[in-house]
Length: 72
Image (cartoon, rainbow, N blue to C red; front, side, top):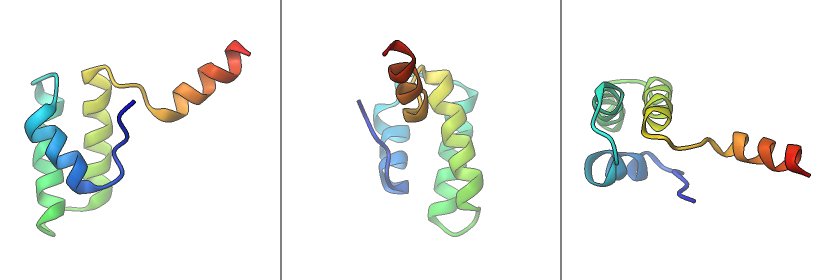
C-alpha cells in the first residue's frame, strides 16, 4: 500500500511513477506544482490529486478500512 503524506511525495509520484496518463493526472500535476510554488491552494491540489488517484485505480484508505470492517 502506498501512502501519500506530503505534497512532495504526491508531486514525485505524479511526475515519475503514475500508472495512468489521463486528464485527471495532468490536472493534478498542474495543481500540485502550483501549490508547491505558492501559486495555487493546497486544498485544490489535494482535490485534484484525489481525483487522479481514483482514475488511476488507487483505493482511498478510508474505503479500505470500511471494506475490512464489513468483511468481519
